Image 1 (spheres, rainbow, N blue to C red):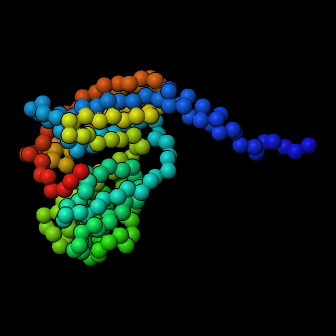
Image 2 (tube, rainbow, N blue to C red):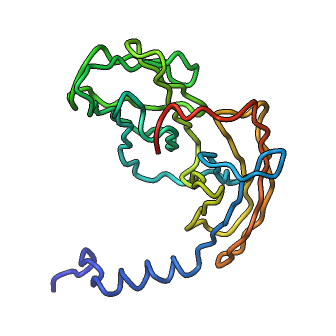
Image 3 (tube, one colour):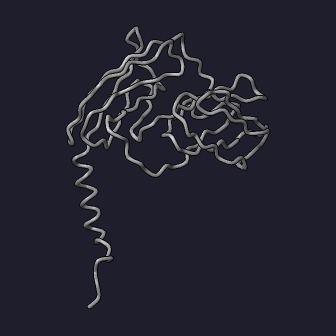
Length: 210
């Protein structure tokens, strides 16, 4: 008699299991404001679990150079993610960073031939171009798969979190001090609303595009 132990589960069964998990997953709807109560775009928010974060496959991210700007202006990725820097301009760029979280340099290039860069430590990475001094961009690397970036209205949503205890954190490239952190506890099927505050040094520069 043949063993059926290696037989795969039917697709409908798998789909039902995934749907069941999604129905039990929690989410956090977050609004970020500055010290004057104004809503802030391009703020990075993430939920750090008190227990170890699960390992998930990383997808490559991309930061384009277009119209001599980095696009998007702010990118957030999980530690261990590779990021490509395609040059969509008719001129060559030389992308670099001196940031402690990821110092690197891509020599003068055009097109999409530059190899991806592995971002293997958490923290802020400021991007520049040795050819165009006014080009600035930002990558923020977090040690969790649960992160998001605020839209123009200062709001965003982190979805598909397992129930449990987390620390909700925020970062902005123009902040004058570390952003607010807040401890939260989520039930498996809960949607929680949260507000976070960050103090800015000045009106943020729009050196790049979203």
